[in-house]
Amino acid sequence: MSLNSVTKTMRTLLITLFLLWLLLITREGQTEEFAVPNSGSPYVNLGNLQTGEILHLSTGLTINFEQMMNAVAASRVIYVGETHDNIEAHKVQLRIIKKLSERYSVAIGLEMFRRSAQEKLDRWNTGQLPLKEFKKLFHANWGPGYKLYQPIFDFAQANKLPLIGLKSSRKVEKSFRSGDPAPDGAFYPELDDQDPYHRAFSMAAFGGHRGTEKALEKPYRMLLLWEETMAQTVSQFLINAKNKDTKLVVLSGGFHVQYGFGIPKRAYRRTPHAYSIIQPMVTHIPTELKDREMEVEKVSIPLFAADYAWMVEYKVPDNVRLGVKLAQKNEGVTITKVIQNTNAERAGIRKGDLLLSMDGEKISRVEEVLEQLQSKNFDDYSSFRLRRAGTQLNVKVVFKK
Image (cartoon, rainbow, N blue to C red; front, side, top):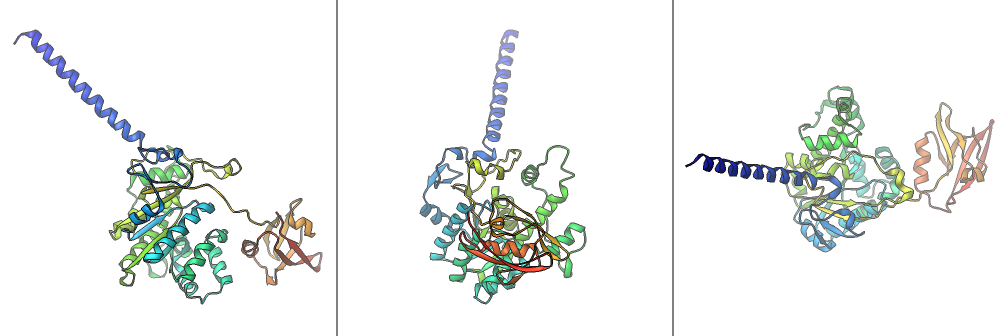
């Protein structure tokens, strides 16, 4: 073989190797491109879907509700995410629960309640816990927003669907945060902090960027405690023989189920089982609600965000407002400001008034006022007993828009 022939052969080989290398680099780049969280599927951009459409992310096919429900029927656990204040997401959750309960025994696992609330949840399920006490339980465990979940709670009670509190108790969280042993002789759940995608996604949501991971390690550990505890509760439900024929629908913030590396993976690690993730998703936020949108650094995750993306509108409840600022002081709950042109101002409430009671119920904490306001609709009214300059007086407030 001549020198020219060898040189020509070598050149051809090098060109071939270069093209092969280039092809591999291009394919890697495509994988990353399709892994951007907002893309949803390599086949379909979520922004191109219409409200009400359901997308099977791994195939890029749009399906109807009945088809989705037939598919998820094979799952033992169905995770349904939510944006907590979105009315439409909760409608999706209720529709899924209703459909499943037509054919199967169903229990509902809730991020909104702590495991320490289970005894009272069981009493609610059997009708032994008064509604007023149940609302207080919700507010103590979660905070405001009872009306968003009320249709789900009402359906569950009417049809005897058990409610399962998933989250760790405040007592456990306090000990964990302080670095102390778990209280009452208990043990913390096993924490898996080795998932690089979960860590990257969480740090981005926390507002982290390079150089801040160390500062965000404590909140990340707390997130792990929450998700591992919820996963542990799911696992305990699954291995309990009395639940062997019952499906568990888990309702939680979408963050905890998106991509599967939050609660789903951690529950599966403990007890392998079939599960599905349904994520109500919003691609358009109305201008008037833009202030609720989180600014999150985009992270490339090579996983599907869910099994099914259900496109919904973003609607928040139009709650009644008293129109005051409240402060907890030694003497009780005090009005520190009355906002102009509000229900409180129209009723004659003034700055410095001390709230003694609301609708006949003694007021000693700010939370008690917020709890009662949650049960009010527009055109309802409340009777307040106030103390002003040493004198007690009654004021009627009508809740207008």
